[in-house]
Image 1 (cartoon, rainbow, N blue to C red):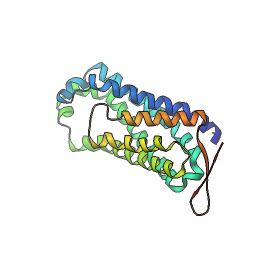
Image 2: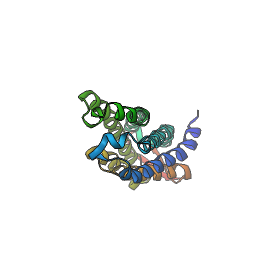
Image 3: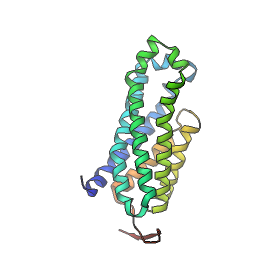
Image 4: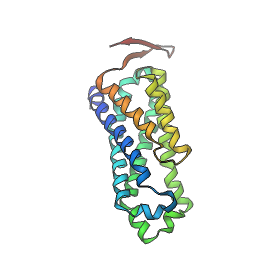
Length: 209
């Protein structure tokens, strides 16, 4: 697939992924009960909620290459580092959401103690995707600030939005992230990006399309 194809599909898929994150975060206070985690996990609403999150991360996996293709020259090595870590972290998070949608509800019925009091191994499986996801999107957001191709406010919101969920498991904590991704996807899709090219000193020469 050419860079133009990646950019063409990257905008809509990132927008849709971001919009789904916004929708699911508005749903989360009515679905996830941290005081009765095994009880809420056993519900069909919990499975649907995580299936939507799985779809959101799948869409982001389609969108990340387009986001990077649009800024690859201006973002330099930081852009590629952020892209790779964000892609791997998002893929692992998608697998985690798949497990939460299709496996966790059955576990909550048969062995609720594993949900309410998870083992160290289960906690590690839970935390690793989120940590890589956070690190990758923070680096990717920093590369966007450096490249100055995407709206700087959207890139800043991406960094903040990636950090908030890992700081505390609060209902709706990924809302800022969803808004930032929707904004970035729209900027890519609409062509409302700045044209940047890195010079030999690593600075960015800007122009408008």
